[in-house]
Amino acid sequence: MNWMMKPFASMSLSLMLVSLATANDSAVADESAPHSEAGFVSLFDGESFDGWKKAEENPESWVIEDGQLVCKGERCHLFYVGDQAPFKNFHFKAEVMTTPGSNAGIYFHTKYQPKGWPKYGYECQVNVSHHDPKKTSSLYSVNDVADPGVKDNQWYTQEIIVKGRHIELKVNGRTLVDYTEPEGKESFSGDFERRLNDAGTFALQAHDPKSVVYFRNLRVKKLAD
Figure 1 (cartoon, rainbow, N blue to C red):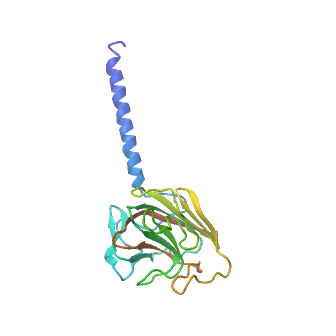
Figure 2: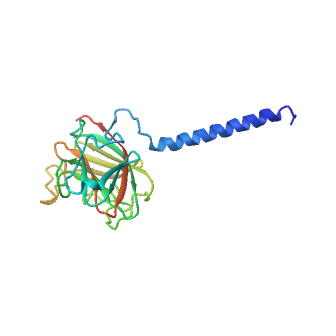
Figure 3: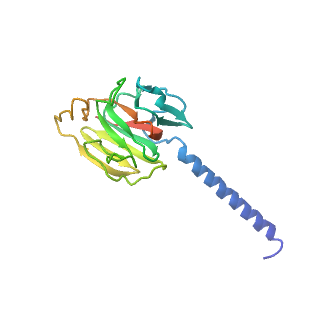
């Protein structure tokens, strides 16, 4: 190489390395940035519980850390009560990360209750390695999943789509539950209806003191009736 070209080659290489580093930094930042998708509305501002209401039992089980909703403690459910509620037909998305041995859940078509396990609506299970055999993306005790194909300590995207009596649950874009509720479906039991209502809201579950689970980028798009 001509000696006069060496400084320019060195400068070009340096600029290339800086560009690559900047691109990598941006990619990392984008992983935790709120998603912007056509028609979707954010349900969590990343800073406060505005639009959310804790159950009266063990409210300390829900905290906000680094823009994430975190459950860690005794049973407590966190209900969405913001302006977007109620929801009938919708497409819901959230990023979720479990830690080893943890259990949680995402309820839909439910309604606020101060204590106990939510009676109304369905639960989308959140569980990768907890001993409960009903794993992540199970339509709990209705259409259960044994292997969701995700790992603890890694973020995954959970989708819940309700259109009429049809329910679809997806993890990282893959459909794990495709269920149509029978007309006139009766309650599962006196404690749990496990059926769709005219409309309802979402609730996140803190299950037990050993379960630590993270939620972020919660958003929803309402669908036409």
